[in-house]
Length: 413
Image 1: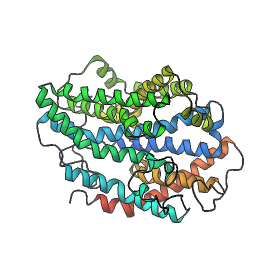
Image 2: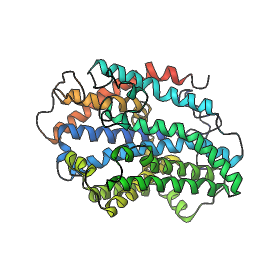
Image 3: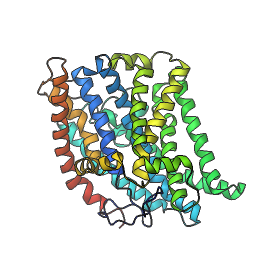
Image 4: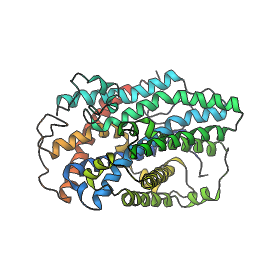
């Protein structure tokens, strides 16, 4: 019988997609990755065409650019922490650190290193063959103003992910040890530290908005841990409901009957963020990084972002008594396939968009582009978006089949 509880289904996915042994797979997360990468792609295309500088629509594109990476962080927090949270509740051995590290390395390194080398040759992305090229290969480019915007600029998020991958087993070990020492219940021992972690990330973000710390710090794992902690907290809730640890509340019952309400909340959050932040295009984004921001504005944006991420993820985590629009959308095969190859799309899309849209961009690549963007026009943005998505998906498909899959099949050997 369908229920609002974390899916403990034992589907048999490809070995390359299988979760750690003994843990369920959440197939709808593939489509969530697709939504996140589409948001990032839309932001970059709008930036190239100048659409982002238009009133209203530009604010929405700017918001999407911020939310895409945050959704990726929340997804990582959920999927990677859930096996640890489940082991803590059941009293079983946690995932092997060696196996965990092997799985993470095989997931991100081959495709990323291949993309770096391939795009350093064409279109000639800046920095890879320089004296500080080693920073890009070790996910250290986000810690210097000289490298954060070169190489693959959007890969600053991978620096956050890499730091999280390293810290997660230690976090899980400390949570387990603290519970034994304190005698606290499982739920409290899991959620209290996550609340503190999220609060710490919020403090760093507020400090960044007040120019008390640099944007490099705010965009590192120290500032982005709020969204990782949110995903981890959802993982705890998923385990608790799946194992009967928590009861269904009236609110949970409401979500079970009307899951579409959550995505209405997500759409409302996007509109709220555009109204609260009013980025005003690329210039507005850049100015905001160097101008003290009102405390209430920053805190409101953080609250709306947390609401957006939660409303978007929950329908992919929990079963619904009557699957609604969110589940039907997330089960759409083209969206699921885009999510499957989303890592490659994420790695290649910006350079693809720049080569298609610009004649040249010395700041990002040395090759000669096609120069399709001659005038700021909505039609130009739509055309460049479609072309970028098509080319990026084709390149990502090759990357997935030729580079990613052969290594992913080795993750349990």
